[in-house]
Length: 316
Ligand SMILES: C[S@@+](CC[C@H](N)C(=O)[O-])C[C@H]1O[C@@H](n2cnc3c(N)ncnc32)[C@H](O)[C@@H]1O
Image (cartoon, rainbow, N blue to C red; front, side, top):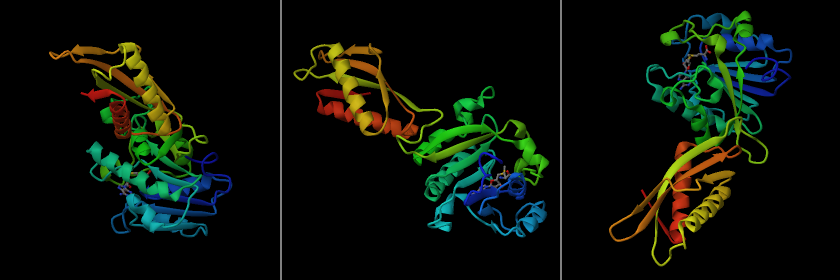
């Protein structure tokens, strides 16, 4: 998050959204040896509703020639606010919906932020800082939570064609020594716990062949197929080969590098009319083409459709 790796070195443009009291922007700039050429730092709240601790930071930041402070900026609308602009970094530290007890609203906020922010980067990246455990990635270890209790950031990012390229420890103590005092504890002008273990998640636009994820997108689906009479593959093993070939073809066409079908069906069934059915697990994985759970379900549906044309009847 802080200098030197992500912001130092004379970047051209940086956009910060969701500032609380603007102390992060001040601290980050004072850590940088080479400041960005242009930095726009924004808060959701306007001047009247923002935290009182913002005043000195805003006053100091407006004195810096490369800095522009804006208030009342909705992070979910930035593509239409900064039309045609491209940033080297778009930053959101500790995104949290004002209704802080509803995890689905935090997810909706982050998802809408991704879907707007993706229009403002080309080769740059989006940095999202989260408390350890919130992101829902393997980097949360040893503070991993159950999936339903996380923001599920890689899944949200994938839906916007964004890929997680790195997760780094947030240099909170360094920033705090330069005046960073996060706000937002129960929606108030107060700091919160767990900051020393926070993580910075870096997302880039997916560019297969160029950008590789630090954790792959993965999907596992159960599909049952009737093996149709007349058009029947000779045997169950032939059926499995054809399912594997078709799944690989469909996944490859969508940029998904790996697909695995178990060597044995997990289920076999024969109905009263003698129709035979098998159930298989389809597991897909990609390091280069991010996919959300919804997108992997869609891909599975495409595999089912392709096989239906190829003498199988998928069901279940
Ligand atoms: C936990 S606070 C973190 C504040 C600040 N980033 C920091 O590190 O101190 C969460 C922030 O998310 C902001 N936020 C909530 N919804 C937003 C939206 N739609 N657009 C921009 N910011 C939003 C809130 O205004 C609040 O300042």
